Amino acid sequence: MPPIDLWDTTLSMLSFDRLTTAAIDVTSLFAAESFIERCLGSRNVDPEGRTCLATLIDLVINCDPIKLAIPLERVQEAGELFRLLKADFELIPGAGIALSDAVETRVVTAFVSFLKDRGWEWFEQWSAFQLTHPLVTNTHSDRLGGRAVSQEGLDLWPSVRREILDSLGWSQYLAGWAVSHRPAYNLAKLPAGELPASYTFDVFRRGWQYAETVRQDSGTAPYVPHPLRLRCLDGSATWDSVTFRQNTLWSCGNYVCAVLEDPALPSYRSPGAVIELVQRIRSAMRYRGEPTWDTVQVLGVAGIDLDHLETVHRWIVSVAEDAALPSLRRPQGPRGVVGESGLAMLESGIEKGLEAIGAAVPIFISLCRIAAGAIAPDLVASLATPIEERRRQLFKARLDFGPLLPAERRQRRRR
Image 1 (cartoon, helix red, strand yellow):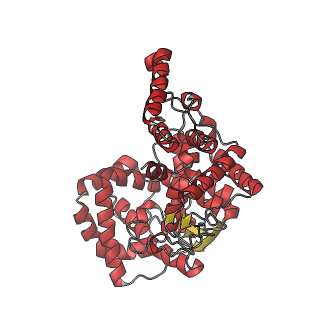
Image 2 (cartoon, one colour):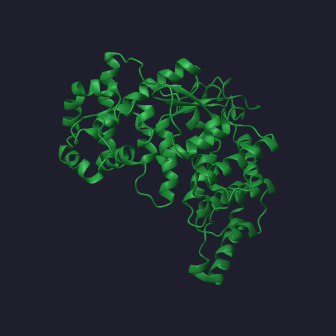
Image 3 (cartoon, one colour):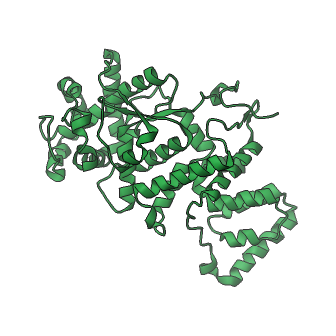
């Protein structure tokens, strides 16, 4: 049975709208750039930076345009990533949309639940980044009319502050927050101990406004919010079509983040170098005529077509090779631990074991994947076994470009 389009499938659990455009928020943009700074050694960063950068890169590569939700009508250049990607963004102001009383109640409940789950350390790091890092504070004059907290947030805070502060039970921590982090300003005119909580609640609440703004502007286009806002939007998630593709097809963003984390590749740790990688991927995809997330067909009436999914993975690996993406460090294997003789015994044992049980190619592939973290790739490539050439190539590609392909899918394939 040939595969069918994602948007035509009768399998409702796996059915998603077409993905030609998507939206993010400016909070995610700040977080994405902070991840690059984290890889350079900065500690004043957004704890969700890696997720935000990976998603930003994936959307830039697979969607056109990217809707960027901002509070007001304009925003000054919000960092180097914004400047470099400005042509890819369409700005949509999202503050000011009134929320019903029922929604306001849900927002407060979800906010308290979210922060209790994340804990004080997460909150302290996130709020310190937002209220002290110039990447964020330099844009408050444009984004929030010169305030750290929007006027809506200031008006709402007195009616919710007691419930939020009492529920969190962080009074002793909040009291020392301003002393420890010395925010550049407190234009909200709030007690110092309430500024970070009020500010974070204001940002959290705006997720509902952004979601409605995106719906009005772009219909079914998914809005992928900063992870802070995911709990706020539970029950109205529109980002499933993005995370499904990241977890099933490929994620160039995840690979680029792995490059930034690799200590052997420090030259890529700048916004300019990151966008250069993105442009190389785009050029390679145009040259090869390979499909984007929107056009890939991986679903059949019986579920995901795994054979076609392998073809899709080979396509994207070819794109990575054409784009000359930097190679990550491969597993070093047991050579230095057991020596050459021990390595030879391991190789011989695998071959004899396969002969004894008459192992089929898929079993060998599974064994290799399980052992990939311990066996050096040169050993795997040299094993004298009857592997189909195309599967040998795909297995080697998984070692070369592992973070590009979803680990979750590899695990399902093994079962």
